[in-house]
Image 1 (cartoon, rainbow, N blue to C red):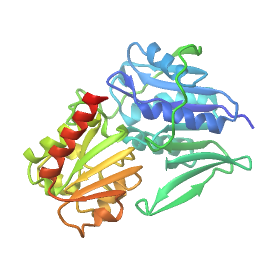
Image 2: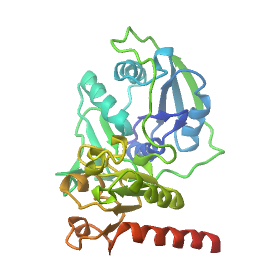
Image 3: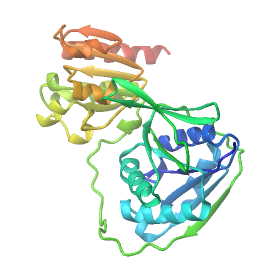
Length: 326
């Protein structure tokens, strides 16, 4: 059964986030040969971003233009996307499970009066039904869910579904839709970012995270050096954030970001259950801690019992040497 699937793209700093391409790959599975329609909201030149969605698998893309969409607001984006949904009448809707996705999709589901499957890590077709796998109980277990009737609506956890191969030669129509946005209750004048520059933490393939064992904001310097050497991002436990060693934008855990990188290096992190909820599904976990009884070793694939300030410099030097010899 072929389906028309709407994929809501997410733009940050005029670049499509990688989870958008992962959502397209998930939509390809759901469509079963049907049409994939991308949606990008914003203000200004969006055609190039639309073409990028086409190169990654969309059949066509609708760019939604309005000056009130220059900065994200749940009310403004909801109005814009709902108009596209009403015009396109899709069988399914997909989006990344990001901060914006978690804010926007429940509002859309409520307005459409449909269900929402959030934070899916796998999508498959079983007996003609679309089955989503998602973690529950802070990642201790997984459940499988499917929509038996109506529009299929789901969000995809970043770094879990492999994007389709980019095809520069793929062509598709990129159209512009001028939508009406009624007066917004909240107007965003400016956005001040506290996140660090470089690789996006929630989409990073490598994450180097520090806990209370880092001891100070100065203690995070070797973590940044290691992350740079590996092309990754730096994160932190809530304990490190509470101690003012770093900004809360780096927090990973039940009340912070959920990350699923290929490699997660935990430095001076004890392994509280709240932190494990945000990183335990990482593909490979390396733990560095002086306490051999630390709970983090129970989920780690590789453990180093030692002082992180002695281990990290050796690790950094070795990685740099490997790069030189490569």
